[in-house]
Length: 436
Image 1 (cartoon, rainbow, N blue to C red):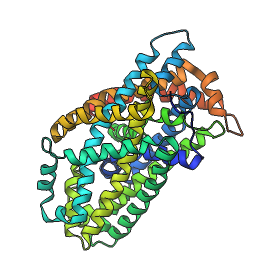
Image 2: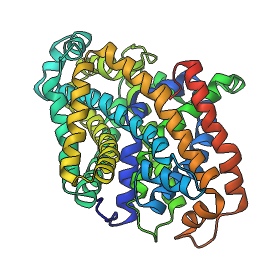
Image 3: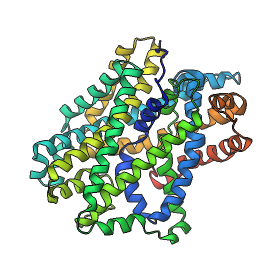
Image 4: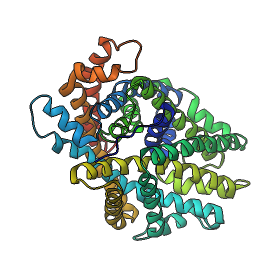
């Protein structure tokens, strides 16, 4: 049976939620999309969608978790039973599998980050051409040791429980993430040629707002950046005290997540331009382009260590959330105690992931999970919250801790606008081969 504990305060909850939301997409995808789809003009649709998805999507998942006190399987089961229907547990297994699938791929990627961090500290990363270093790491069974360490870190953080595990780790790692990236951004600002990077990011190209792809990519980036998956934020909501204002907490989480994305852009893109690199290099930006920059930069070894340490913190806090979703389900459904359930999840993540360490395999795996499984799970969550439970039940939970009840416009927007946009994310992810 899951421990009936709660976050000690709002700060702990928000930082844990931000830790879950801030991930690799904030670090390498957001800066590229910001520059590629209109610079500052891209921020208008992006901030619009962040505000919308944060207010009703993130709030809804927090509220569903706090209402039921459990994860996606139990929450979806509860929602369906309120309508006298069965099958909620089966539907809840879809976002659960999404979290497990992401955890499998994320553990591999964070293992690569840890190895790059070690290479930065020792100087090995700067002595070899970055693409060669990356290929050595991402071959078949090329990073087993680092893979195991990352899984053990995430598992150990959870063995002490929600308060001493997730909350304390997040309270340390997330402030450290911001501090390290601020240091990097300040250093990068003094690089010759950095001004071109700021122009790429900040000069608005308004004509891009007339292109549908700009709005689609802004919507996808906002949706996935907030970690609206129908599972992870539900489980964190289940540990939230009843006196807390959910909508306000969701707003703060969305704001800090956006700050992390912007900070990443200011730390990375100006450096990319300063050294004549390609800002549109996508995922290789983090593992190939950035190390090249550090190899050319004065005190590159130190700043390389700062960069990969901050990325490691972002990755570990996200991975902890995924582990918690899965281990909670094992606890409640298989009636297994907390530590054995965490061990089973860790073993499953490694048993599958070890055969996906070859980068092309891992890429195909993550595409399958993020294009198909995760968006479908998120839509199911939205439907359960605003259509199956509806205004009366979920509204009561959302209004707890508030001085003023939410207006009718909130629930109309959630039911008739947000839910259908979430469904659009599924379709557009398939059409575009991924938009998050």
